[in-house]
Length: 203
Image (cartoon, rainbow, N blue to C red; front, side):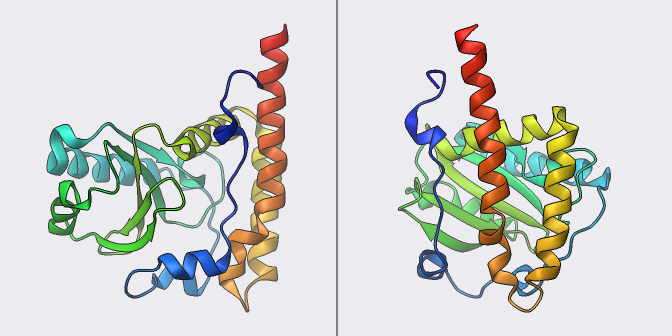
């Protein structure tokens, strides 16, 4: 796996206790239930609109803005919440970006310095999860790899969708377990991603 550094290949699994420790203010309403919907082409349009507002508000502070997560994969069923990775120079320096995002109506809900400095903000309608990362953080690399793999591998895309629908039903009475329950299928897909990369390196 020479193409990717160790911190990209090894996935971080947050515990519920860590998530609770990072919570800022009121938990999102979307944590109270999990609803999986068929893919909607409007999700891409919603990302484009959010990206335009973010880049206008932050200007040169933006290193990159990427649509990630299941709503970024055409044909994939998903929770109808847009996940966006925003890279800035230093996520710890909240004064450099948080006031501008708050003026757009975003509110900080997670502060997780132990996870590569991750911050998460919610849009006013709670239909965008905005993940803020520092330059060089490995997790956004992983997110792009996963997104691009599912875009080009329909078998894994369908496998992931089927698993998500089943887990949404299985965890209906404890929806905060949903994300943790997905770890097995996600890790299996990542194993195929990195195995494929390794095979290319050796060819």
